[in-house]
Amino acid sequence: MTRQRALIVDDEPDIRELLEITLGRMKLDTRSARNVKEAREWLAKEPFDLCLTDMRLPDGTGLELVQHILQRHPQVPVAMITAYGSLDTAINALKAGAFDFLTKPVDLGRLRELVAAALRLRGADGKELPVDSRLLGDSPPMQTLRKQILKLARSQAPVYISGESGSGKELVARLIHEQGSRSEHPFVPVNCGAIPTELMESEFFGHKKGSFTGAIEDKQGLFQAANSGTLFLDEVADLPLPMQVKLLRAIQEKAVRAVGGQQELVVDVRILCATHKDLAGEVAAERFRQDLYYRLNVIELRVPALRERREDIALLADSMLKRLAEGTGISAAKLDEDALEKLKSYRFPGNVRELENMLERAYTLCEDDRITSSDLRLADCSPNSENGESNLAQIDNLEDHLEIIERKLIMQALEETRWNRTAAAQRLGLSFRSMRYRLKKLGID
Picture (spheres, rainbow, N blue to C red):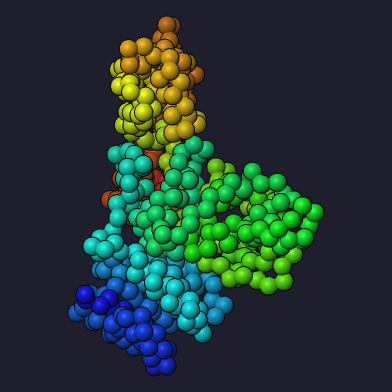
């Protein structure tokens, strides 16, 4: 078999030699470069499976090299080597697209773990794995979401998944985990709002026997359970402030101490989190720590609401009805045309979860495997009432319709100006401040 190959970029000979020896013992071939220019030359000549680069180089920065590799060699994961304590630099590297980072002096155990994880990103045939059929929908927002999931799966960066209740945030987190280098290790989801405050520290970090009343044996915490894998913190905004402090320290130090324990245990966990609340608003209201917000929100991924992708409703409904029929020996029910139009006109405040519950109820009520609008038990969503005026449901949908138009016009302006936000704002007759607000409101990166 052809040995895998790594590119090492550092202007310090001792560091290059240390990395070459360590990777050589891992059965990797290595090539070394002293600066950005030499690195680019190597990348143009040979294929690589991994790149390790220092942040500060004589003729540029590691960030410039990350951007170059993302543009020219997107299949190559890049890890950044930064000075000890340069957390902002490391976070900037992750935002730029780096797979992960190391700090100097380089911990060889951590280096070997990082290299092994990076090399696991590619399947046996060297191709990326597709996002599976659980994430249904052919609408533009869903196509964008799939691409973002595949991109984020190639990183170790913390991801904040935003979106309304029932939109599928946990599924998105699972797909990021399953498509990434940690897929063979645990995915541990936890609903932060469901844990009693007095038990939170024990649940997250574990406890020792006898550490408090009722602690009759040692217990492993969620961080230990997710070691080498992914910890998904759902409804993270519900964490009380004292627990936020302890969570921040665990993330920063990559170590936890069990309640009643004397020693810290090193853990290697990727953090994904989600909430239906406006986390930035929670920070502004001083209900969520700003420092923790910046550690969790290295990259934000927005899951679209169902009303933003109404063209997917027919596909989702068909899949859900087939799943309901599985194992019953009965053919799957079908929506008649009027019922489907009613669903497409409905606002769906509960999103995909509400659609699923609605169809399950209709499935049990329908006759002759045919679901009618009356089986759905929806309020009248017709465009006009008897006197020719729109009803309340239609007014809600007008807001959605205007938001869709606004999104379409802004995306068109951004594409026409090659994503120059200032130029796009001018084209739309908006101030830059107004443009920035609208981009944030619509979840456009």
